[in-house]
Image 1 (cartoon, rainbow, N blue to C red):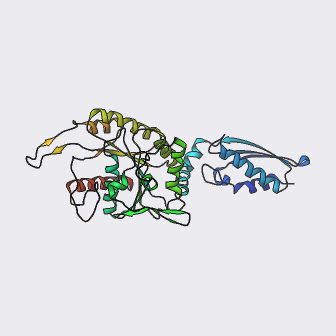
Image 2: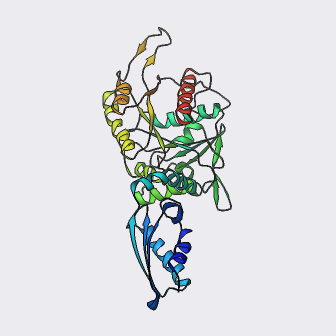
Image 3: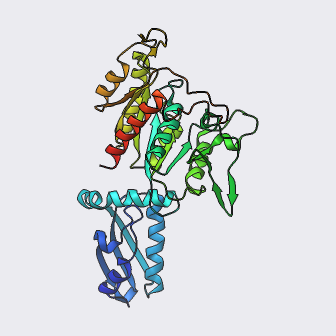
Length: 352
């Protein structure tokens, strides 16, 4: 019959499903009691989170190990580990979760670009921030997670579709940036008529089934507001950072604050606010016209206790006959230079 020490030794190599550490590392084997005459083993186990499906799987694993090694019956009790133990191993658990989400290897810096409402230029900011990070020498990918309102492929002038290699989807690369979007899987710009769970599965596929390779940054263009997809991202990526996009209009800033508050509640670090469509500058007079009002970005940053990363005026990219990319600002364009400054601030904050 098993001794107490043998039981502990058998269970020490078992992993806590939440902290991704062995029970030996977390001190998870709390008590072991043995009734030799009945070959009964009773164990108390401490784990990072109780009363979950993962706990049930762990229970089956432990019972299987003990019965395989001589126990006739097994009694298990679970309790939550002390807060200080969970805090000690939580960062490693979150990193491990994100590594597994992308299929292993070094995980990139995840940055979600969000807004309170549509039409404020969130996708334009995502695309041009990605371009500016690439120009800074970073390896960058974009997930167009705005599944109902996908627009990134068109903005970047992407005309090809992703390839499939084995069981992996190979993202399209444009201007050195890797891109995956719902737009690649929809024919003739058809509307998406899906419910939340189906959308969540698609988003999960964008992580797990896409061969991203070695990235420094993976940007997520989120749908506006605080709906299912935004909630899924907050759940999937515990260490994701966020940029909030708004116009200077007070109402847009007020609505954007909701997206920011959601990030705060889920402990996502807000890198800052980008105020888009901040003003229009006349080429003839040089005067600035504040078409959508003034001060919304600054006020939003104050509410969210963060900084304004940049004020972007209303301007079109230069027209280029040889390359179609209607929303990509060239490196020497005034807005290209502004995005470069924003990207530099992001890198400084993320990699400090």
